[in-house]
Amino acid sequence: MVKNIVMPKVSDVMENGTVTTWLKKEGEKIQKGEPLLEIEVEKAIMEIESEYDGYLRKILVKEGETVPVGTVLAYVTDTLDEEIPE
Image 1 (spheres, rainbow, N blue to C red):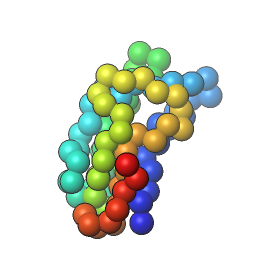
Image 2: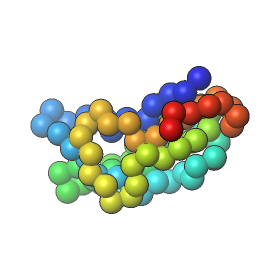
Image 3: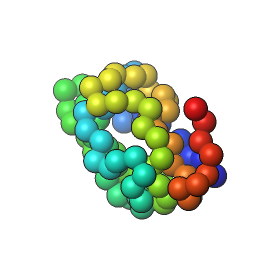
């Protein structure tokens, strides 16, 4: 099953966030609660944890990109052979 990692809303006034660092690479196994990426919000860097167990299959938003809250940042799947959206 494909699961979406999205830009979280970490404050009431947050509209956008910038991906500063991906802590995992495509194809890496990840666990729920494990640090996945860092984002910059209102001049503060925040670590975002994975909400899922599985594999980080495809990163859609590159480091340095700013996107609105709710934007899909990456796909996670249960196995490495599951199909993912293009």
